[in-house]
Length: 106
Figure 1 (spheres, one colour):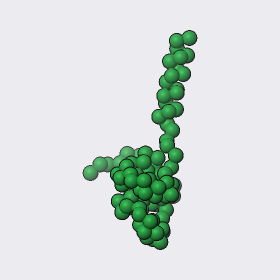
Figure 2 (cartoon, helix red, strand yellow; figure 1 turned 180 degrees about the vertical axis):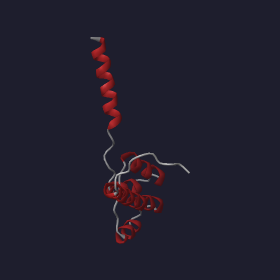
Figure 3 (cartoon, rainbow, N blue to C red; figure 1 turned 30 degrees about the horizontal axis):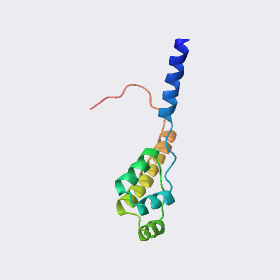
Figure 4 (spheres, helix red, strand yellow; figure 1 turned 60 degrees about the vertical axis):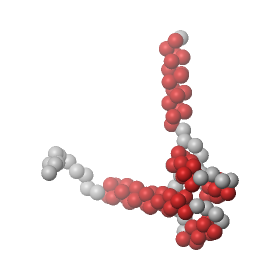
């Protein structure tokens, strides 16, 4: 009986660690900014939820005009760049020929 409770507690803790907060939408970030939250706090919420943004130049201009801080806009743009790089790395990996054997480290 004690083992079951330990297993149940462990699985509950692991499940709690595996869940992420919901993504921070652009509108939510704008509301956070207008509510007076610091750019660092907004960026941290975006990081914690692993949110990725695909903004056009006109989106960035519009959001800046509505009061979105520049550090937040810079971070949002960086998530797009990072995501594009990760996608390309996955495509490169999937299309690369298999590698066998030992490799020398120079």
